[in-house]
Image 1 (spheres, rainbow, N blue to C red):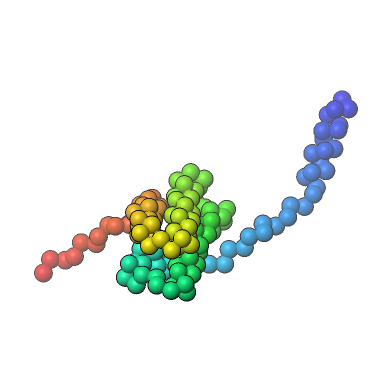
Image 2: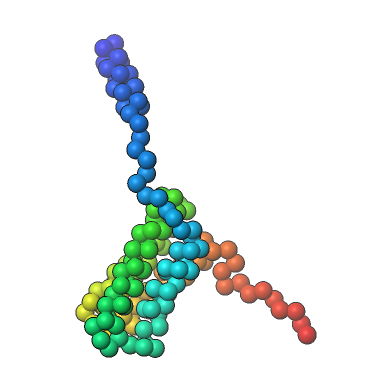
Length: 145
């Protein structure tokens, strides 16, 4: 009997403790994250060969883009943004991994290593878009003329 009372008191005490609000407060929408953060930073890596980094400033900019890309994967995993705990989290982790690898390659000033990441980065984007972006890669039929 005393065990039940102790358990009940413990339960009531923990239930009465106010829950702290979530420390994260998303500001941007999913579309804003994609258009204003993920697309530009991924494009900096996808198209690095168009204007290869030559100076320390160029390499630093590439590092910043790669770091931003990696951290954007973490933003996608926030509880308020994650669509589920399975595929969504796996796909977001692929983005973190690709961004982190690009950061390490840029830090080493290794352009061939950055270029070699294109497929890994591409796959991280496509796998997610195939599942979560409606009508991804579906063309609208054009009327015959």
